[in-house]
Length: 285
Image 1: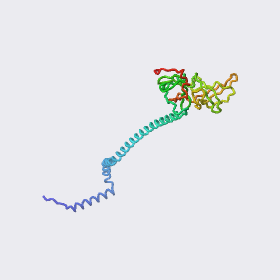
Image 2: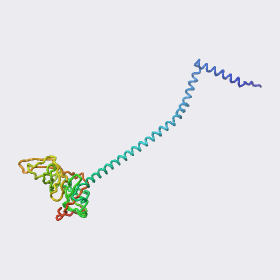
Image 3: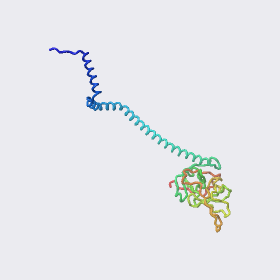
Image 4: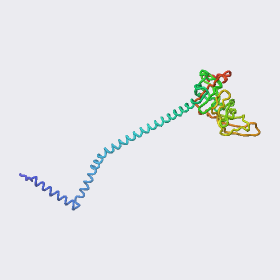
């Protein structure tokens, strides 16, 4: 049995003719439309897979960039918080240094004769107007010794122990302090009222030249405080003709509730501060 073979040339020509015929039929008729529709449907999964595969590197890069950015934001927020805390600490240290500098720059009669001490206890403040400091006669503290802050006069030492002492504030009812009005150099006595931050000037005659807002400083009389330390500001002046003296109230220059350190001063003669009447306190109280 013989088999007729078609040469490759004729096979190519036959395929070419069929291809041209199919193109003409496809262009002129709708014969192959169902086939194209089915082909398009079958082709969609492969096209979608190709697009997804091409988008994977872009999505991964975006995700990586977002993660990196979020981490950078967290790091920046942490650094910002640390810096804010450090700034707060810096401001606190700066203010404390400025306050101590002002305190240590207070002029005294003899340079170097001063002692910076800490307040360790407030005995019934604001009712008794007493504070306890962390130095005693071991450091040379004596009864009657003046105590000041960077804002002005606080009071004077009334009891002395080995390593602690009691300072009575000028607002205590038992305290009297020679003062002077800055505006006109009027001399008088400031007396404690028993009320925190308040003193009165009970010995001014009705004709005395004193006004609300007048500043009071130490006059230097009495032997405890040198002249010029701020004492307070006049807040009220009442004139009652049925009384022999004006009723004058003043606010102290120092609010002890905000004071942490006290500066003790030495007078030229400590014995003048009342050494003979010294009281010792129990360091264990």
